[in-house]
Amino acid sequence: MTPSPISAPRCDRRPRRPAAPSSPPSRSRRCHGLADPVAPIAVALITVALVTVGLVRPVAAELRIDVTRGQAEPVPIAITGLAGAPPSAPAVGRRLAEVISADLESSGLFAPLPPARFPPEAGSRPDTPRFGDWVALRQQALVTGQVSGEPDGRLKVAFRLWDVFAEQQLTGLAYYTRPNNWRRVAHIIADAVYARLTGEPGYFDSRIVYIAESGPPTNRVKRLAIMDQDGHNHRYLTDGRTLVLTPRFSPTAQEITYLSFLTNKPRAYLFNIDTGRQEVLGDFPGITFAPRFSPDGNKVIMSLATGTHTNIYTLDLRTRVIVQLTDSPAIDTSPSYAPDGDRIAFESDRGGTQQIYVMAADGASVRRISFGDGRYASPVWSPRGDLIAFTRIHRGRFSIGVIRPDGTGERILAESFHVEGPTWAPNGRMLMFFRETPIDGGLRRRARLYVIDLEGRREREVVTPMDASDPAWSPLIP
Image (cartoon, rainbow, N blue to C red; front, side):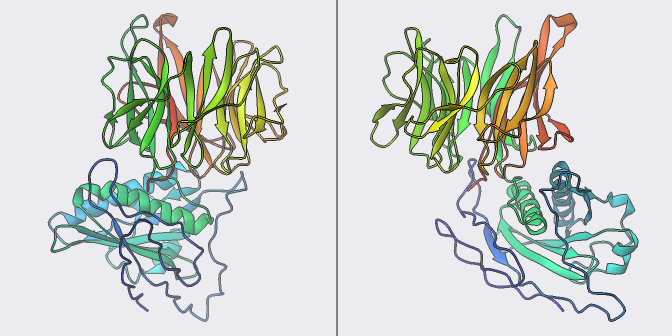
């Protein structure tokens, strides 16, 4: 039985996909352009059809991955090259499959089958797979699809996700986009597969902003840089003539707040990714640093150093009203909102050593939550709200860990000579950080970005053109 397409909704500010039978709710996606000017992606939902299972085969439970179980084995999945008409579509189809496979494998939840092991004519029948071929290869899930050109020059990319043992289509979608936007379509498809099989949003259609570093230790050049979460589509946002630090995304992923020495005075700035416009955040009497957006994007929270005191303030971006949240003779810094905006995690030495504290959004009800050995810094609240990531310094070594907001359940995920700057994937299932390694007999340090899962078992490097530090993961791209 061949699924029949449903007409695509018009792209307004926030269209929603129509619900599919037997399908969990999917998150909405805005249909306007990316940071780099490209055509909007219109989405059409292909109806989910249940294929009649042969009487000799028992009815199988629907394939689903439990992401809350740390010991789960990766699910065998085959992503065929999306079939297409010549001359260019077959090549695009192969590249799409390669990116989808790499995305899913990087999560640690999927084990894509190498194309060399595919059965003959794999992918040539995207609407009616020969399930027996894939069962013989012990594959549990299958992705097929087609790529074709539209009269207006756009590509149509359609895919279907199948439960191999149940011989059932789980979901199917079609996307229309300009040819140079094919990589983003691959990330969106990977997100759809991840979401359908785990019941949680994916994180592949997202970006990373970080500090690109070059030059000798005594004259380090630091530039804002941005890239896709897998390291592709890399570009620099600043030219390196001014020192920049601690970039952080807005909830819309279109603005960045960061620390800059633009006028030889450290101050917090806003940077618009689309226009390249920079704007200083407020006219403060002292040094402002460690800025971060509130969950609704209407405020920036930051530290202000005046004299010997460093306290935490908010700046309302609409009214420009400044509110002081802490009043301590200590150093209060690195504030991070909970995703609901009701609480703030921050670091402070008010108790004699650098530790993590949590307070209400208005600065009340301050309490310490870190009590392990060493010093604790750079708290970052998970998008899920269940954990706070941190950096710990103990006996000359650095660690990346997580802790619950009530101070329980502390776990160390990575430890090294120097690891720092944790940042969450938008679904709260992965962490990125940077690691510095001594080289040349300790005369220099090499800085690289890494991603690790919440069990601390799977760590991988995200390759960048030069040294990289202080990453920030974007929300899903609108």
